[in-house]
Length: 222
Image (cartoon, rainbow, N blue to C red; front, side, top):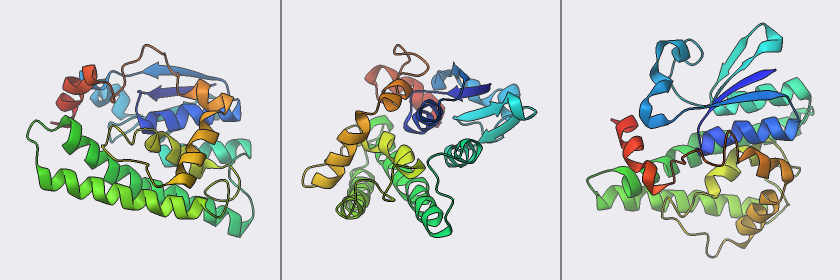
């Protein structure tokens, strides 16, 4: 059994989608980020950085894993799914996973902050991060021009990236003129495990893309 600590964010959804795709038994605990539960001492023992998602694998002597990319790699290695064993193929998947972790997530995350959450609207910052996010989308579109998924076959690179792309409107970034990225987004959205994963832990869980959650997120960002 795996304990999942999560929230309705792109990073949180990576973990729940992966658990559903791998058909692993797990129990989800949802955090309302504005309440700052993720910064309480008991959770900091699981993730010293005080962020979601995190997992605890009860079948592996209560092994805790934090950072969404590390969680995806751990679960892929645990199940032998969505991460190839061949050196070249594995490297390609990890490269695109790191592209999401090091580029799309940080840049789109900042676009979200300055476009949606910051009480002071700084036009330079909004345009800077939206423009860079759009450029990164164009990189994805070119990659997907050659093949169905980011690393040829469906993998943890797609699972990591898809929840961010679905939030493009929230960041104020358009997918217009990116037909390959749009096609890829729609294909993944139809996967039954993805549908289950994005409803975890509850359809009623407040999303950070929900206007009603803005004040809670602002409190978290202070």
